[in-house]
Amino acid sequence: MEPRRRHQSHAAKSRGSLLLMALLVAASFSVFSAPVVLADGARDASIMLSVSPTMQTVNPGESAEYTVTVRNLGTEPVTINLQSNEDTTQECNAYTSTITQITGQIEAGEVGEATMDVNLAQGATDECDTTVRATAQDGGT
Image 1: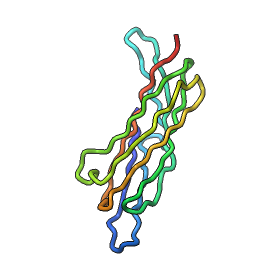
Image 2 (image 1 turned 180 degrees about the vertical axis):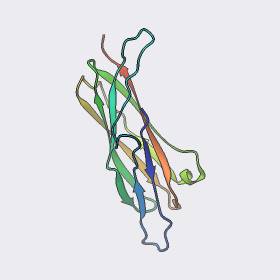
Image 3 (image 1 turned 60 degrees about the horizontal axis):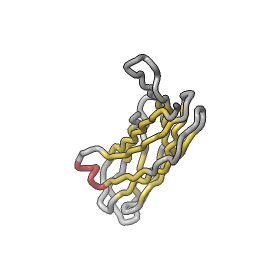
C-alpha cells in the first residue's frame, strides 16, 4: 500500500512568502486498496488507506500535519505498520516526515487513524514526494 504524496513549495522572493504543500493522489483520489493473496490461495488482510488534507500552505521552517486513515476491509482484525519516507532527490533533502502508529488491532469494517508530520527546512524551495506505506497483518486466529 503506497500512496504518494507530493509536497510542493515555491521559492520565496520575500521573507513573508509561504511554501505551498500540495498532496497529489495517484489513481483513485486518496483511496487505495491492496488485498494480498497468499501462496495457498487464501486472502490475507485487506485495507484501504487515505491521507487528509490534500493541500496545505506552510511557512519555511514549519511543518504540516496530515491524518492517515486505515480502514479494515477484511473479515478479521488487523495490525497495521505505517512508514513514511521522502524521495531521494536533492530537493527532498529539505523535507522530513514522521508518522505515528495505530495502536492495537483494527477490527473488521473499522478504521484506525495516525498522524503524519512533514517538516520543511528553512531552505525548502522545490517539490518532494513523500510515500506512506501501510502493511497489514491479519490478526485472526
